[in-house]
Image (cartoon, rainbow, N blue to C red; front, side, top):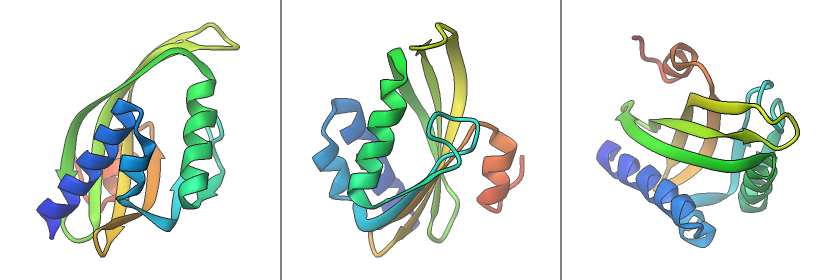
Length: 134
């Protein structure tokens, strides 16, 4: 099941990269939860369901000029968890600050669907949440 979960998370990111949220939503449970860290736009909040995922993405991307995300790898954490490692680049719309930083997403999957996505800016925290270490 673990490799299947990795493929599901890959398909979610592939859909996002193409701008095809419907393709991504085929792999996201109706009542899935998205949790952003407090230091991100919209952070410290929890978004629920596919509408919540869409709202969180719109809010996040709307805060940037020239935003780009690049997925660099997926780690099978065994069981229900998959850790996505990526890089985000862009310029803050209101601040004008250029950003080029790593970002991590910890996905929880059940019965072939993502039920939770937690975002981290720190690799150590993401690994710890996944039950892994450096």
